[in-house]
Length: 478
Image 1 (tube, rainbow, N blue to C red):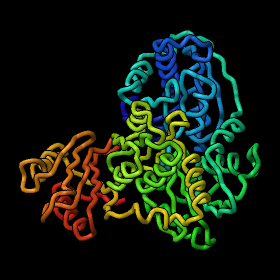
Image 2: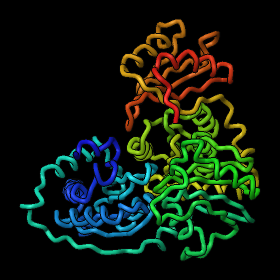
Image 3: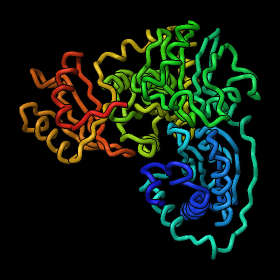
Image 4: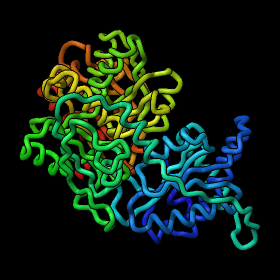
């Protein structure tokens, strides 16, 4: 059973058939053993390094799973600081703010309400993936026998961190004048976080100048009006319609655990997160000229081009928060953006935060006094396919064929790299074969190939999409 719920980046499965309280206890035990051992191996001797932060989302199964997880942690010997119901980004903050051995968030992010899971972080809120600890946690969870083990008796402490967290997030928000903002919480944790950080429930009071128009903030019934996944365009229509209806300056739609969001400009158009990465890069490079900016390799070429033009250092990274956080840490980047809507900040412990991303975008709007559509127009200069999924049995064969057809020595003679999947670049090649590039990679979470294609114009995009698609299998629509 454990093997079916451990994924590349987290633990996730349907409740209660694949993930239940007994398994949550085992995983808590395994996570505690790994996190405390990792802290000790790192030379950490502080008493706080026996503490593990635990938080949970709004799903109806989260309280009981959290309780079982906490019991597993304390039975192994870890101490728990329970921060209650919160967004995932608060866990990253709490681990650093309290200097703990790690943290576990009980959440299934954007999955349907019958799912749940665990996101694990170690010291400094560094992500724990399959190769960086999840495999060890699974091993320890499988080995423990609840009937024969002797509970170590770790303690549990409830802590309210909203005041400290609010001050931290709001340190990124600098507004003047008034901004009307639509926020779709997707019946997820943004429905709790937004009022406590930006609204009247905030210990700092409501954020000055912000008029928030809330959508789907109710999150106690375990139901979603729409799938809490803003990457799917159909889930953005409520935000788009509300922006136009209320003549708002901008709109944001959050995912289930509120660690990422998508933006809608004042004209009701969805803004690509790679385009936002380039926009935010300019903001941070104005503050720190010459800084490094990390971006995921699916991003528009405009990201690296604009960073370079602004005197910054573009750092191209693999897809996934494990790799993006690593890229920030290794390069010392001030900021990083991912196509999936995760935005990472050096001054947020290299961790991602939907709330901070929104704060910076609002600050840019306030400082420039320009509409978002005007700000992104020069960035969105190439034609993009968006991420398209394909189902094919022989994934390796398909990738090999793409390299053969378009890589070095072919008629196209494009460049190829395999940092993450296969990236073929024919953008600067003249003639029939040029003016485009594509990344094709295996999904980390589903049995699919994912294509991201970009071209100099729509005509070239359509031509290459028609040429590549048949080689990648059956197109899968959402």
